[in-house]
Length: 207
Image (cartoon, rainbow, N blue to C red; front, side, top):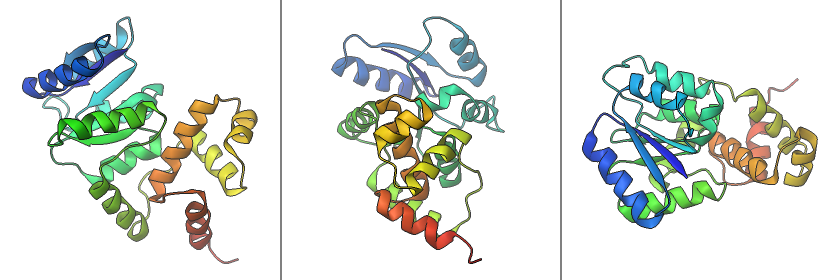
């Protein structure tokens, strides 16, 4: 497994790399401290299987790297890390298909558990942030629409389609469908399909 850590704090990169290597000896970790270095790393082979990204980089005040990832295939394998998360950026990442958020202040056990859940196909954020995202989902209109693929998955979920049906309809693997379903649920701040249908039904304008 190849992992790229993008963070301007060398100690964060070194600490996260050491933690991942301690539990997954075969993992290969590369660090990038600037957005420019990250772009170069993404062009090299072997390509990273996972990207741990701190959105706030000194050479990228407009978050252009983050936006580029959101508009590319890389976002499906991106985990956000930050000491001070901005919920609207996390929701933007969710809409694009990012796999989760892990705070830099988290205990090692939480980091490993969160990454293990992500590898299993789930979306992961700590419980306190999940609650905050649910509150924001109820209060705010999303600033970014779901990606076209996630919109397709959402439409099938609204029709009550099971994962295997979604996989067949969209030509996806069962594992990928599980990831996409998890992202749609997390984006809307709901725990299951029933809550999603009820949420979307409540948001649909009366005609």
